[in-house]
Length: 177
Image 1: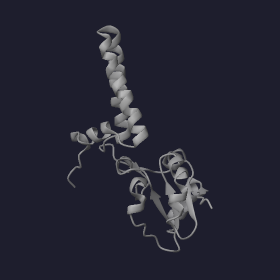
Image 2: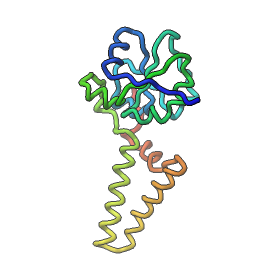
Image 3: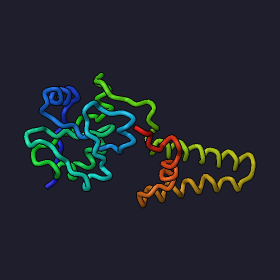
Image 4: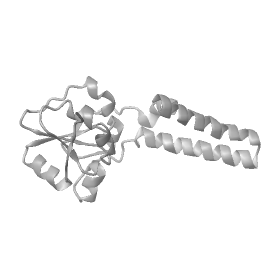
């Protein structure tokens, strides 16, 4: 049997949270959560979902969210399996919450999400390789091919070397509390 998450509108989620009847669980990665999240949401990244204990009062509604709702829907079996009662999903995720005009806690000093950084760096490297290949020497096309191969490898294996390197950058290191 396939588990489902019942959708709730941002207004319904707000009302349940305000009444203290619900727990909002944000399944985005820690770097995404640090940049922007709904006040009171718990960060429980999907990447470590099975290793983390989800402690929720038995009578509380569990509402899952991510950025757009797609990640939550894609993992609904995994998520709902850890909840004893009914489980819900915030329609449209964090973006839907924002569109409804509801408040979001944002830390503009937090670095961009690591995957956005990967996209920016990969795009710059590919564009650089193409421009240098056209205007300097055709050997520079290899840079674009190398980055494309790396992105393909990351997609197939789930290991992104560029993300690992970017995590070592000074702006991505944890700040002292």
